Length: 175
Figure 1 (spheres, rainbow, N blue to C red):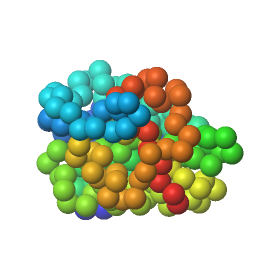
Figure 2 (cartoon, rainbow, N blue to C red):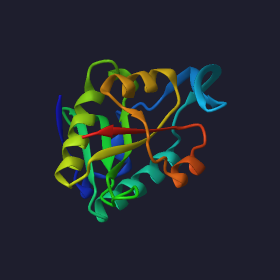
Figure 3 (cartoon, helix red, strand yellow):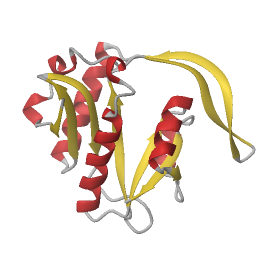
């Protein structure tokens, strides 16, 4: 497998033909009385064709505005991707937003997420960021992944992210 930048002309629906977003979630982190607790909240997270079309629009915007998009490919088949926004966030512009990091269901637990995270972190560092900002899915497995990388609760939670995804965990990673 190879990790590389994804070009704007590659961003079309067919790019995701071999990508499986499906995630069966049983346990999630929930904020209760100012602290995180793990709760049973079973659901299946999957994307429809409309979701993929919206994702493609968002990723095009990321690239148009100077952000970065990295993909892990098995031959020509996309198996994971990460995007980072170029616009500084935070009171001092210390953050860059890790707007997406997803690995295909058939390739999870193989280190692809770590590879993509490292690419995104390196790009953000090169842009002058001190930290990555992550509005992360609250699934137990997702939180274990980010915490194992050294992510912690965001010192400055972004209100817009929290309003859009109230169950997400707002995290940061020091670069």
